[in-house]
Image (cartoon, rainbow, N blue to C red; front, side, top):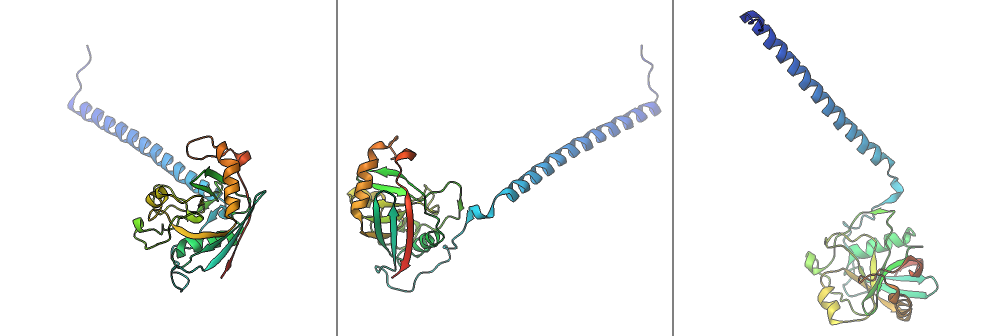
Length: 239
């Protein structure tokens, strides 16, 4: 049988319990604080390891245009595809100024050289210009569904910015329309930023699609790397 505590002993025991609980809480808080500090330091270290040259911002979103009339070509792009030939495109910088400015800036820094067309669908389009090793600042989608007036249509030979389901998500990838169709005008016009047209070398586009589209490994036109056409050079000059 245990000896009954005196009121004084009871108070002393309760005080000891409170002190023990407080120390335990302080210890737990200290561990949590250490974990938080470790996480913050980890994020800072990871950010410091990001190479600045892998981040690209063409500063296109604030670009207002080239000061001319819409429906008039402002630039001529020359796209050379290895083993296939040369495609020339007129770009419409007053209809889609942000898209053109972004495309020109990337071309001028040699960004597109060596990159492939990785998605090709016969009768629809060929898409390329992506580089998974680079982090590129997204640009505003210049099309009516995003509140931007752009009346350029996705006819045969149109060049347009590729994007995800997010309207302002286009970065560097573009596509060239292979054939004109009602589906293009339904699914692309007003929903994707067309910014120019092929004026020479459409036969090169036809040849690429004929040679590679049948190698697609999925229903989305994904082409195996060994069959992907590669951009040898892409230069742009002002008209």
